[in-house]
Image 1 (tube, rainbow, N blue to C red):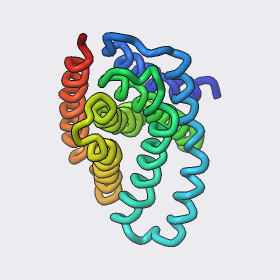
Image 2 (image 1 turned 180 degrees about the vertical axis):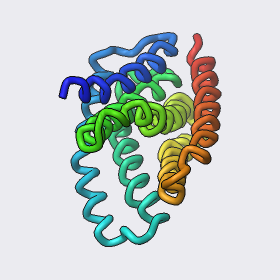
Image 3 (image 1 turned 30 degrees about the vertical axis):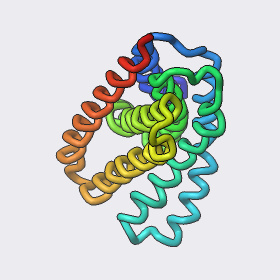
Image 4 (image 1 turned 180 degrees about the horizontal axis):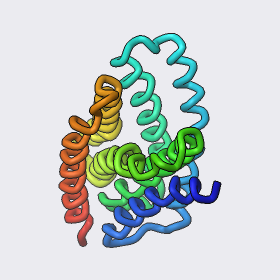
Length: 214
């Protein structure tokens, strides 16, 4: 059990450290831990919602990928960010949005990862770290980037708040759809997808960090 818990938590710790240390003005660890835990608490209600809908729409790969899995997960993370972080006094710089959105996403991904490893075995720990856990973090980067734009700049505020949901939703759905339609050689299309996703997110992290400078 300890090995599975360690393997389930380690990727989130590594990724959170990476994104956190890129922040020029570090955020309170207590608040990051709080939103991480809130993200983790989303897993069970979202799993219940997904199970309820999958019994009705399990035959449609497109609907399951985008509207059952991606929509439910990204919407609740987006809503949690607005409810807990968006108006918080500590959210006072563009890059802060990335840190907090990644924390919410990794909280969710960590519990999901632990549950998966308990059911399927620790042998999947490395693959899970590289793909599902990392992808959740990167969807969080995009969400936080647009929340940061919305918070710091009045121009197109509502549009950026919408983009904070739209782009993670579309990319998460695409990720799911790739897995569903290429169950055998899934790594062939998914590796380029992840490389492009990392490049997109690193570029937005750099942009947000520059705009955070005094």
